[in-house]
Length: 338
Image 1 (cartoon, rainbow, N blue to C red):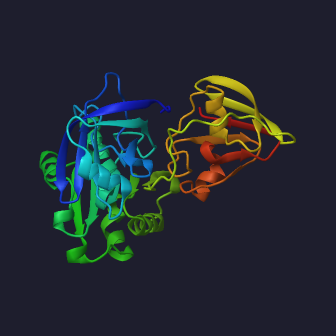
Image 2: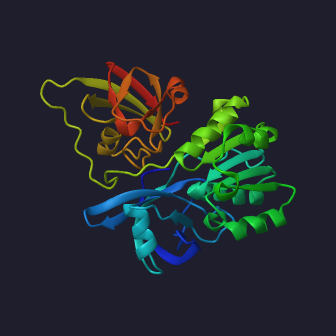
Image 3: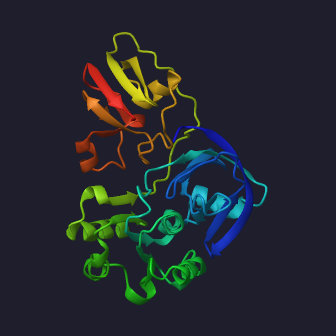
């Protein structure tokens, strides 16, 4: 997905729980997205603006209109503004949908592990898979208590309509305590032969990831979506990639959208900034090393990253780098988005 910027009009706001709201947008003609992706919203704040990423809870080809779901976070500058101020008719600036937390096939069985608002992208995946494929799904959904369960009625309806393809198990902290390794392992073991998607609070995701890895699930079949509050403004203008006197400049070869480009890359300039400055439509979202939307494959050479909050060691070993954080180290660098 490219870095297209859009202004969306709010069609409806639905209160899902006491602290969670769904925001339904009028969907522009030709607008496309994948289940499990997210939108980056530009929101007003007393300090100016803040950017926040919220997962899409609607499903393409299923829901008529694009929808995100936002859970209020204590002290959260973005979530509280959305829950307190967004109404029908509100217009919001967004970046085009992004993210890779999406199934490669709707015909593969899925193990879905969600905690709290982590159900948002998972709900999108569930509806798309039921509508477009044959895959069976087992969802473990953890919450504090029954009142905290987002999409409670919708999940119950989907199970009733597809009992042979969707199983939902609610894990309530008020009843069962916090999720722990042994009981979670016993629950999910029959479902680890397909793909696994994990989203929720960090301790929950760490526990869930350890469980499925311990059951022998390979890294390439485990998909984890981590939420990070952005500090900067992805809409900010990119500084021109002009080398300062005496600065090292390396040769860069880029494969993007079926075309090859040869560029001079100043050492102090981030790869994404260079590409945008040269008019290339490279993908991105947060520009802070927190979302992986800008991931690029390093084919030759060496780069260093200022920050990396999302790529794991296995990703780095495969060659993935974050373009928004990458600076050149070697004299020649080759990367590809293909």
